[in-house]
Image (cartoon, rainbow, N blue to C red):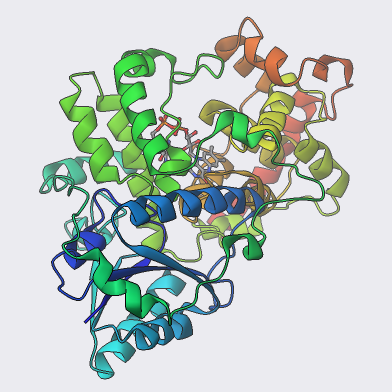
Length: 452
Ligand code: FAD
């Protein structure tokens, strides 16, 4: 009987536990991807992520084809589509790698139960995180709220497993006959790419989605840039970071592969791996707090007086027209390339939340729509971190001054000149000193809430 492998945020053939487990099944393997914008609570992808998904699925289909495996594309609620395709195929087994959002887990658990009740074997594997969230707990069995002890606990637990090689399929043609009866959507019909206007026109100059590019990017980073990472990762003009975020977001490379290749490279990768640790921390936090994108982790911030009617300020921030050069450069880098350097993400987020007093959820939503690496855990986690209400957050009163930040991290103005050379001509949207004082006064409301 055929085995169905359901792909989700794991668009790769290397180190794919579910695909590897299917390799020895005698009836052949069929792959499935479901574009699910219907299941309750599953967050629909933003525009930039859809651009990435389109190209990543093209790349996955080609990689699977080379292994003799067909990728079937379907759109709809996964809870209905997966059993339907399994039935059409006469599949005996359905396999997938786990997801960690609450809504996704609910869909997957119901599916597993339903498939098993219909006599199919359904099985899930660990493929997207280095450590399963329920294995890293405090002494009292709860989740960590502070990063350093969290990461120490990760490093003290059994190390991430070695990556699994791309599987070899014994008799690929066996599935060909069945496949004729299992239709697939055409990727182009999903209209994932923007057309009128094509705001992603420049993305291709910055990115090559897909597994092959992800592996090449890791190798190139380890050989050429990892030695600069510890000293230069905060300099936006220096391109010292890996650029792996969207590849990890879509699972084109596994964190296990990144982990083991980094250690084997001989480069000094401690700092780099601890950044991967922040990805783990964000996902573990999201696992325990599924409302991360909507609720303040620190509920005292429910009393924070966000500015109502800040639409014009928000629009100027989104368009990179604030007259604050580092903020404008970051926002325009984001719009044109689908990414933004981490240091600048912190600066633009702090400016929105603290100098403009705009609710962090507005900024999170804009990043969700415009980042190619927009990630259901890392994005809200980091927004809450900057806003001061998140896990192990920066204290609220530490307000970044974007001018000082530029002097420190882009002293020659190389980054600002690259993305927003004209920003200096725009009068600043706000006075940085006065809005800092206003932000601290607003924070007093949170402190009052703390006492009451
Ligand atoms: P590198 O420095 O090479 O780091 C390696 C990997 O570690 C990254 O690819 C990423 O997977 C992970 N990582 C590094 N820093 C963080 C971090 N602070 N939190 C979580 N993971 C991290 N990252 C996302 O992947 N998706 C998001 O939606 C996202 N939204 C963010 C929003 C804000 C407001 C801020 C301040 C940060 C956000 N980040 C997000 C974290 C970080 O900015 C990016 O992961 C990083 O810039 C990606 O560049 P890189 O791949 O070159 O990172």
